[in-house]
Image 1: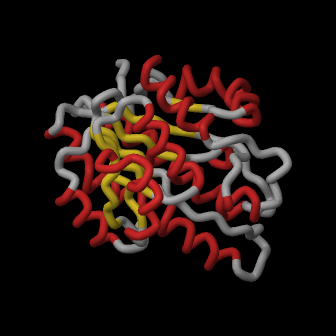
Image 2: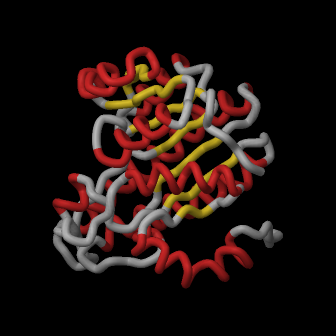
Length: 247
């Protein structure tokens, strides 16, 4: 199934910076009718409103505040594409003293927040014809990086949930994308010391749009991601993307 975002109404959370901000800009420039810029502080979306006018509508979502997700879904009842971009990353290996606390924090946002977004917006997508649900995962969902082991674990769990959503939401005609960027130029990658090997966020936006046009589930947008995705492709096509009986 293919999909064109032109003239569609889209919601992107974590929209005030990094990948999220570029996603909003790219979607508007590719013809989206309106983009809800979901942020924790509404004023942080002001530059996007200044640039694009009423094409961008700020809305409050904090993945740590489940009620904010419910309230946003009650407001954005016309949304056709939901991009769950927001997330957190902290460095910890399994033997670090703070490993459990770090994992709990990241699971709360990266996994439980994903579930809450899906639960709140799936009925709206269904009512509006099916639409699209996009989850920003990471290459870390496929390959654990030692100093970011707890982050990798949270993203692996998010990827597992994304696979389940693909089957569940597919039944209501909703396309699900699992996006797996490598090092992308953001505050998060800078903090992780990856600035020298990171690539521009526009690659993520272009990857999502291309995957929707091609009917793909996995998106590997940058050069590091493509390298990992190439090695993973056979397993993905023959196992992950195939419906298998349970029990």
